[in-house]
Image (cartoon, rainbow, N blue to C red; front, side, top):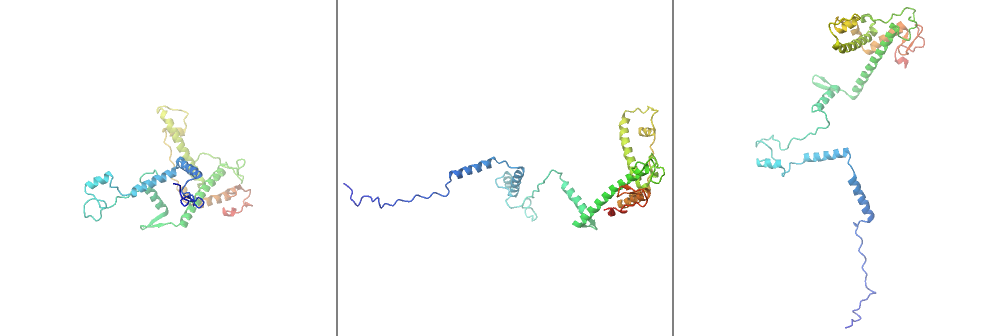
Length: 311
């Protein structure tokens, strides 16, 4: 049977549904390439030492802060002995018993176990003073002031050694201010020779004593090596007095204590330097600060006696 007119579809009035909108989470090809690129870079990234150390420290702290899991072998063994989570070990009724394990203090660095305590002790001795059992700490200003004084004393000490070398040069005729073996006043300059140190001017006697001590130690080290192959019965007619002392054939003279030198060295470096500078000016007309020997006693052109006057 043929369909009626009413039953025929009206294509002109048929509503066409709109296409469903694309989901917001749909990934485009450009986004997919960018995502894969980021994932590849993340897989290829090699963590630095600092990152690895931070990761290890984080895992360690997380493990130390976590409670003992009930699935661990240690917890199960304690549970068989009557332990319950949250209770303390030991005798029941002990109110001072620990309910938490001792904390773990991780030691940093490669120093020994007692090294940190030694450092703290030295630091306390450096910045603190004990006064009747009470520790008095230095303020920042006091610490800086003390450091400045120590640096100034060390500088003055070095200048004292320089002044002693200049004095030695003048009094032994080895300084540039001495001409033709005579001093500026026309007198003969004493030649440098071996003599007892007590006869040397106390202002530069310490330099001579120090040099003699170093030479004595050097000779002793050398002769110690040489004596290993020496026959005790051998007698060398060409040996001098120092050689016989070195080989032990003659006793070496020991210098007596020099109280005058000890008293001079006990002075502050600034006072010792002042005395040497004054002696150089009076005896040799030499200004330690100008580094110049003047031709007359007036020393015309020298700004003054002190370092500050020389700028």
